[in-house]
Length: 181
Image 1 (cartoon, rainbow, N blue to C red):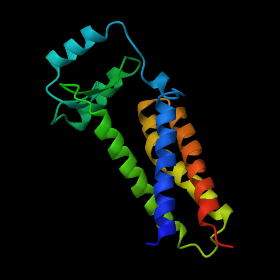
Image 2: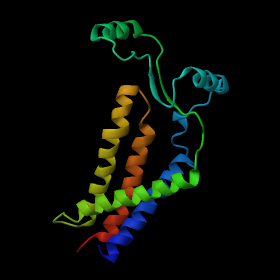
Image 3: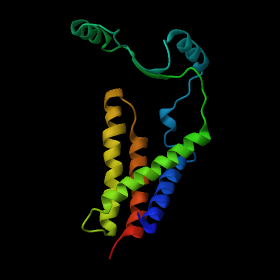
Image 4: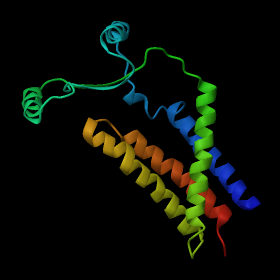
């Protein structure tokens, strides 16, 4: 790996990180997906007392060993009824500094992987770098956030904005810095 590639990876990773920071903080694009309820203390206490442990829950669900026929009957009975997905943790031990470092490091890895793919192209112009970067973001969105939103009926529009904005930014950088004449 040459110096130019290392600079491209470092700057690209920082650009992704800066967009992610802005998206979740100052721009608050994801705010609508994290709603507040005045009953949060009562709900958390109830969950803490009634869930078997940490993890993700889908309600209503079936106990292990439920036959396919019983599952079908329960699904029919659940139509039109409330349902929920829950990510439950016993303690809030968020380490913002470590989480940010991990996010930045994984951004460097993502840019390095993208750059490796881009360097395999016969044409290494601005357009190829930009479009491949944008398509990388869209592929990630379609196979991750959007697929999740199909099944769990969540709003994935903030994730689409992130995919387009952040990977376009990376594409502009890589297209400018790495293009070969």
